[in-house]
Image (cartoon, rainbow, N blue to C red; front, side):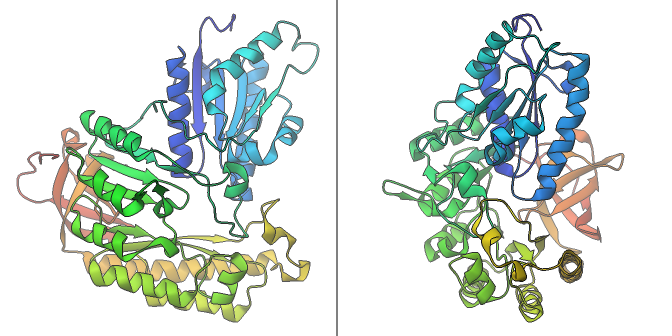
Length: 458
């Protein structure tokens, strides 16, 4: 690359929906600065690996990917490699030491300055020779209590659905979680700006929006709370479906449930992380609720919206979890009967309180794996029973893309369940009525009802 005269960037994202949204944000920032966003690292002058730090396995995957990109850099010494996101914030300058071919490490609050930081790296190259010694490196790791990225436009990659962050950071301090330390405290965006962004999304033809936040339903801004914002988003002309992730059980209020019940655009799906089925473990996790209060929230939601799909997150083998307490988690699974569950074994994250618990509390890896496998088995059994009971139902799906099987499309129900069915690709982006005729694992097999004519999106 000669003085960045040909500015091409590639962003590769790992992790949660917030990371996906951040990847789109970085692409938008770079595009506004004149970069061409390309589809592969081989085409790029700048490669940014946007990372997750929630679990060790995710970080190891990223380090492996960076190692692969190092080979590309040896062929093209002027290639700039950056690592951004939560893992970059957590590891900081240590990452630069472990991966000497990485030029830039940038945390989640540094993206606004991305173009100038890349320009600074280019300036430093004028006085160093990568052929003789390691090139210049730059770490941007300051947490900014006011950074909400207002005024910057994401480069949205989907014509079907839009991710919309309304909140960054987290005020909770769950003992297992690294998020507050890499994303900082909770920062809520201006509701007027959010709603204008929703209007713009609808004007672009996108009909589904997902509101994002670490504890999204704790959102407050002036006299706005989350139920009020959710209702306003749901009533935006052109928006047909609204989702939100991930709520905290403590902020599932009667007011929120009423909005979910009464607003047709709010999907009948609630992802409600439980994390454990034992109250003592929840207290050690600093989750701020008990199993009993969690069950009360689920009961309240289902009483108002009987057909709602409920999914969850569960961690097993948290330090100190006894076999009996693990059994309590299985009992919670059987009691609630989640439509889907994202299951994990505890992964120590350096800097979190849980890592400082007594050494004897940590559960042996083979036992932790055994618990996880049993949890997955119970979860899949429940999910299979639920999906089997839904065969024969007629549902509306938003058609998202072509399925893996030739001639089939993939859509999602309000309950966020995948349905594959034979249809013309012209239906992608529309809403279709489909009969569920069979299930394969977590995916339904469906058939179009009627003549498959395009359904109006608003």
